[in-house]
Amino acid sequence: TIQAISVACAFRNWPCLVIAPAVVKLNWVDELEKWTGCEPSVIKVIEGRQDVDGWKDAKFVICTYGLFTRDAPVVEHIESHGFETVIVDESHSLKNDKAVRTRAIVPIIEKATHAILLSGTPALARPVELYPQVSSLSKSYFGTYSEYTRKFCNARRGRFGWDVSGAANLAELHGLLKHVMIRRKKDNVLTQLPKKLKSRVLIDLDAKSKKSMAKGFPHPIRARKS
Image 1 (tube, rainbow, N blue to C red):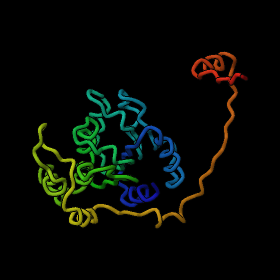
Image 2: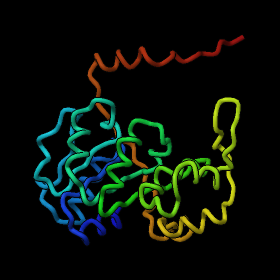
Image 3: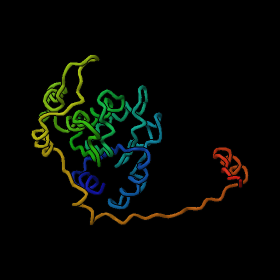
Image 4: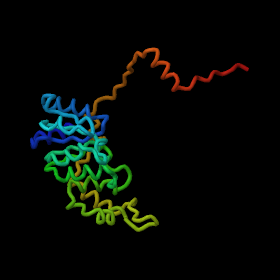
């Protein structure tokens, strides 16, 4: 996160678009305020599919994957806004090249002057899952989808069309990935990670809420004495 923010601040091609899962969008706001010193007023979170006006003058615009659906007015505005720097958090969310959000987000990445994709697991299972991500960064290295899947996914015709679930020429693929990927293993960064903290938060509930929650839990089974 810090490295991505640093890249954005180094090039200063505002505004910068941040695409992230909904659960971390407010974390991005906190990190941007912390590391850039920006006023909250220049960091905007797109609130919904109809939110097309409240972020026009922002320096950082944060949106979630859930906004990229068919016929969402805000998607057209994002596409036409001309973001020169794009940060995509948890980029493995784009692993399915046929998904609506992938088809909407990849062109935004391709048009950007600077694009940073962040992921702890860029490919969950197969090389084909990497293609939408790496090709959006550099299609010249990875070729068309057909070329990529034939070479690295052992593409072959099956009963239901082309089967691209395989893997092939992995050593060559790893060599190409070095041109677009900075890979750090856990052993390399373990000393930099904060210790895991666990805390218990107690919440007071009113009588109605307690009753409502009790209905959702099964009653404990009491053993009978024989």
